[in-house]
Length: 423
Image (cartoon, rainbow, N blue to C red; front, side):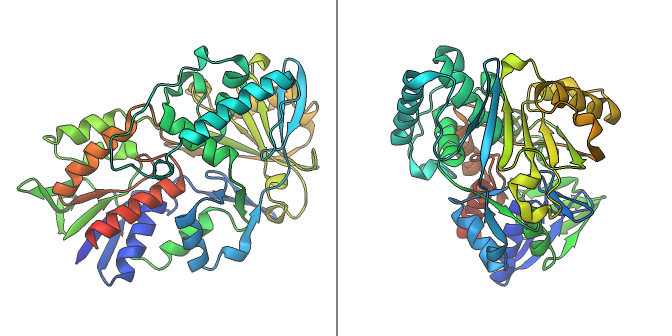
């Protein structure tokens, strides 16, 4: 069988690898000049820094299997240390596995614990990275109707860390909330010492990929996909896998595919800008992340110190600071020059976290992502089922994290579904 894969992010690479292993003829087309999608690596002197996807999770069964098969198992390191919360009352350190909020009192900690336990007990295992066969009930989560400790600490923290969006506008439902609780709060984080994207590069090295080759359209006959169109050249295939980022899918589709167009036009995956500051000194030992409360009035939502996230990646021990400006604050960066973005981050980091920060900078690099983590609003699961039902009838597969969660393991679930039903 001749298989064409569009997109060289993780889902495209994994799908192409799986089909090739089964003996199929596989060709992959990637619009950009590299493989990896949101996963990117930055090298600076002796440092290797993730400037996109940051880590794997211990409940990534498919992801960890893929890492092991490609020789990366011994390069995984558990992220240890603390997250610092900063708000109007001050700052405190939080252990992700034993989260006790020191500034809100025992009763509020118990309130948060009850909220978490209730949602954990309601979680359907099949929905963490995939879909349930039966109807998925989903209820809108409105942060404004929750106690302050829930909205400010629980909801905001897990949506920033897990989805790069503020909870107030995430529009998420029970399914996404329970997914984030399980992933963000109930797993260990695993950092790959060679960079998250090194897995992607390894997969790509064994595949036939044409880079800088955007696909124009899917070719169809009798409402079934028969190949692709590139620069007015038709390339036939027995099966086509669309594995691009969600915002890039619609232009590939026939105009008469109403269900698909309606689905993809409602997917939000905002662009994202990530500055990386290489400093001349270490900062707080064993503090690898920082979350700023809204009361600080900061545009920066959270910060990662890559040198503390995984010391093996920064042998010098000098801090590597990455301010994360999540949606909707990220809208405030539109129209700013790179230098203006850098100066904005310096001012905020000095004001809210690191007095004197501007004097410690050795170098700054800025990474631009055309699209970041896709949103998963309430009711999303049922729309995905409808999309996949259509795709099964039209000889096309959609693979990507936008279907079931926004995570690498979510993307690999879609690959499994595709391979099991088609290969």
